[in-house]
Image (cartoon, rainbow, N blue to C red; front, side, top):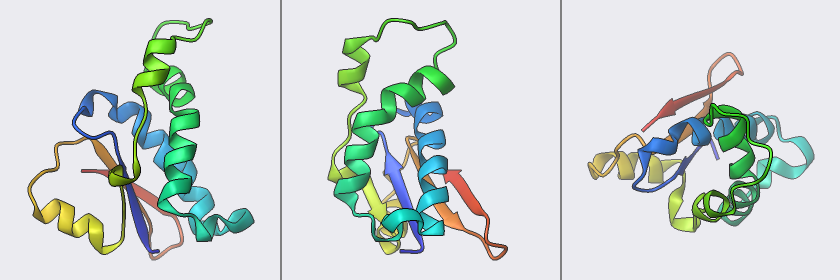
Length: 118
């Protein structure tokens, strides 16, 4: 895999949760740490669903959050259809369905992980 994309389909209000998740994951995927270079869509979905709420609190919510918001935890969930690899990203972009609800990660020619919103 040369690039991957994670979307929170249909709700671009949570892009500030998705982007840091993709950045953190991209650093591991492209470095191949601990088998991350063999990550599957199912793995990405599980990681997002388990940790998205933390990224939401840390990067998107601007009020101090001590007790978990169970409703938001339940809302911040994706499925395999929300993860794209390589050519699937271009096909999605070509379809015209993008609306700023997803983030792509890839490694640039200098070996740095780059991200962009689609």
